[in-house]
Image 1 (cartoon, helix red, strand yellow):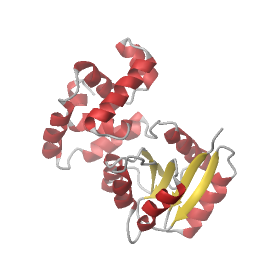
Image 2: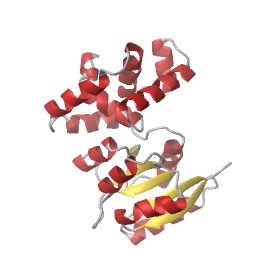
Image 3: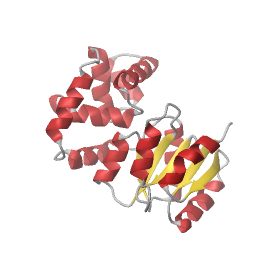
Image 4: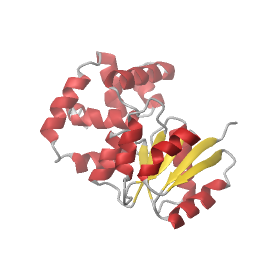
Length: 223
């Protein structure tokens, strides 16, 4: 099996050393590079072609948010997991909106960080429904009216079935749960999710969830 290629980005050399030691022993993972600042990330991505970037959110020159936004605009963007000390703050939310597949706290147990890397490499977000709700509640008061107008315009491009799937994603449902709820196969759900991502110009399911929240679709559905 081809190992997951991982890039570590953190301004603290002790943190990088700890992550490298902790994750370097996994047979299915290869650490292909390390960076001390977001300004180094794009060149390293070009050189090492990682599948996943473990990105510190706070760095002195170019922070993880700016680096995530930069990578998020690339067609070949790797999956990004944000490293943070806070469960929910504006920078984490902005990183998720920019395309990060999720976040982990710096004090997360090593096995859980490794599991998060494996999950995003497989295309799954690393946000539980409970954490997603916490983030959305944190976002509720920030430019809500402007975001809602924009989000509703974008969601209007979806057909009825795609909208149903998008709402289910926003509710934190897995593909299997969506398939059961909407009476379709898992393969069909995956196809709908892919079409939603393409139509809305999004990178992952986390962004679908945030957009459905911004558009007020979860409120309409009673969530």
